[in-house]
Length: 211
Image (spheres, rainbow, N blue to C red):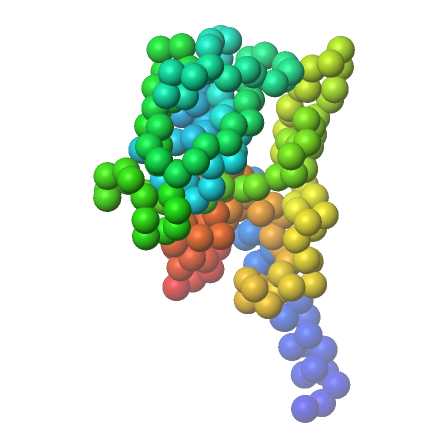
């Protein structure tokens, strides 16, 4: 292959790579954050099976008493309209009430053993350190006058404070660039799929790649 041919091929390859990058950018520009449920309760989902009983109840809206099987829990000092409470539950079935909003969940011993109905789905959720400002792992936050304000999601680089960026390509069979945010494929809070995927892997790949 002569030098001129190599240069033409190199230019063509560069144009293809740029084109792919622009294609990703178009997809990313239209990517919207997940919307809150109609009643504002972000977690736990209704009729969910959780594999651990230590988690945050997260909701949006007017302040209301949180009760789990009739026992009251206190909200932590988050800036309204966001309300967050850390709870710990043993395996079993529970009824949540946040004012007039209601949820039923089951805490499981493992993926095969729980006391809830068999058609309830297992929900995996993103764990954080037990810290008053734990939302700061993923969100931009402010602590003013003893209350935490939770803002927008940080860039994907924040994910590598906990996850190994070197292993990204091996785990995902995909280079890190031009992915601009993990939310393209992963749910920030919870999912019924392993790895907190928003949809089956093949469907997610097809959003950017030809089948």
